[in-house]
Image (cartoon, rainbow, N blue to C red; front, side):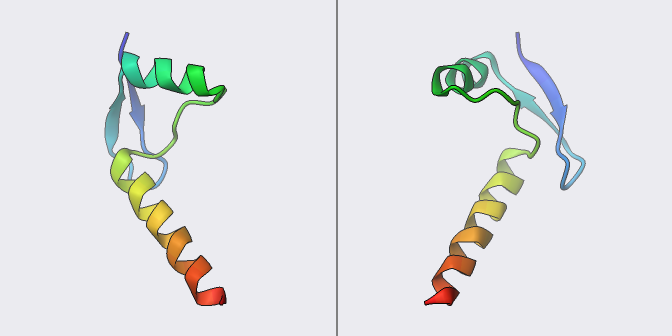
Amino acid sequence: MDRNIVCKDCGKEFVFTEGEQAFYKEKGFENDPVRCPECRRARKAEKNNSRERRF
């Protein structure tokens, strides 16, 4: 069953689909996502940019 989750960064509600839940379980992730896909992408890009600046 799909679940609605509120993003902890932007406050927007997003759907955590059954397929995504199965993927998370298969990968061994124990927690549901706390950020919407857009905020996850932005956070990942931010982390990648900060790594590049260290060198």
